[in-house]
Amino acid sequence: MPYSISTLLTRNLQEVFGENNPALRRAVIDEIWNEDGVFYDPKTGVYRGRDEIDRIAGAIKATHPDFQYQPIAKPEELGNGGRVKWVAGRPGEAPAYAGTDFIIARDGRIAAVYLFFDSLP
Image (cartoon, rainbow, N blue to C red; front, top):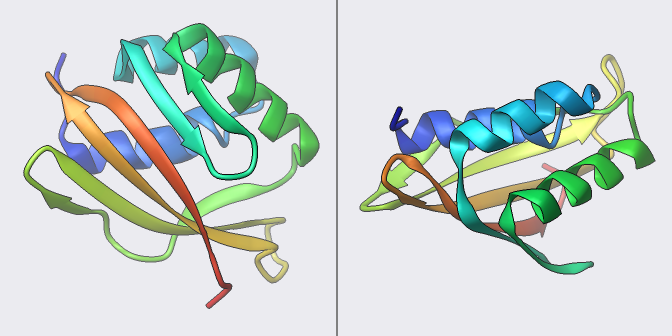
């Protein structure tokens, strides 16, 4: 099923990188990512394919399992791309860090995610 770019951005942020349950995370990856999808992380490198995306999303989440990712603005769409600005941290506390996810979509699924870290608002 194809999804809107806004839906892909939100689901990837919260249900892939924000998910503690490995089985749920993998099910969402299989649903919203293209098989040959690519995740670009400015700190740790490039991850290709669903297996690698699943592995790095789990590794990132394991470093702070109680953090939640929250959009701080509505997702923006343009052509086959989009972005969403977000903050991450423990619920009820000030955000620990912020970022922007930029995606390229193909056939209603994620083809690529480019992660940019931002200054806290």
